[in-house]
Image 1 (cartoon, helix red, strand yellow):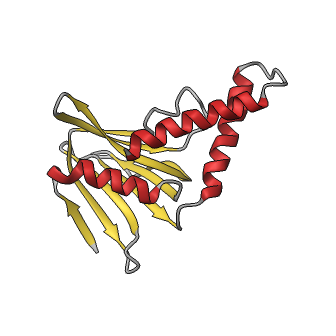
Image 2: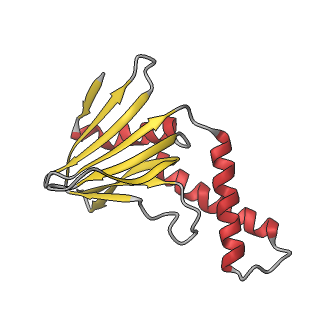
Image 3: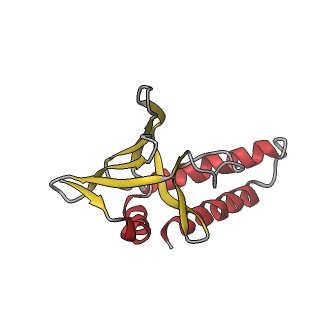
Length: 164
């Protein structure tokens, strides 16, 4: 079943969508006018979708996939400027299979979701992020707990911003 989300419901819908779909396996692709569909992130853990605003004006929709780079963690994987429509597809089991964002210029971003939310994806994202923090510090040993706690905090901040 395909459903178009009313623009007035985008904020509440996306918070709910994120809360029920974080850490599902997802593939993100973008098709710009006059070009082919281009995969951006394949089979990574889905983090969420956010609305980019300037005051009360919706400037864009941002799609977030889990990233191991602490500097890029809170940066969107894909940004769609001037969104015109959000469409979702649900399966017979009532779970979401796809979210599509269409822009006024004809750009289309798709998130194809599979499986169910996987708690082990959460742990693996923290592990990769903690290791990246360790690398950023020059591989200095003895601060593994601090690196882990910093990674958890960064992940929690992104999760919170996408569901609250």
